[in-house]
Amino acid sequence: MALVISYPVSMEVNFTPEQEAQLAQLATKAGINPKQFVEHTVLRLIAADTQVHTPAPELPVWDLGTIGPLHRRDLYDDAI
Image 1 (cartoon, rainbow, N blue to C red):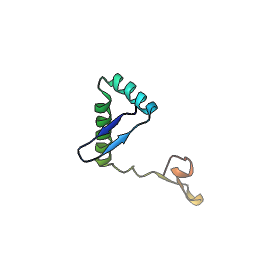
Image 2: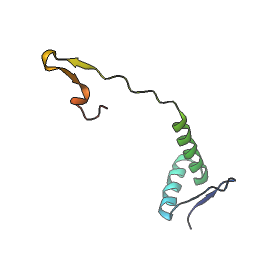
Image 3: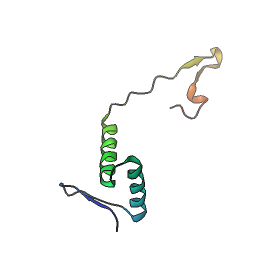
Image 4: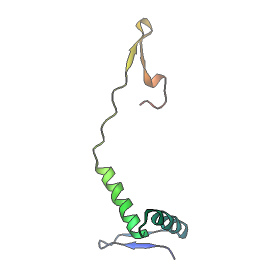
């Protein structure tokens, strides 16, 4: 039987038996029951989503004289 978590505002979450087993394992490691584990996890996601994210700092541009400017994104794929 899959774990079903109900909320007063008619919210329901259904998990497969495999997902339920994974949640039970993680909850056991955390020392709480699966329902509390799911609630804490969702609340952490909501809190992280509402936090103000600071923008990435400006990347340096190197002036190479007559060749032109060289941006970090020209060298590395991770730069935006």
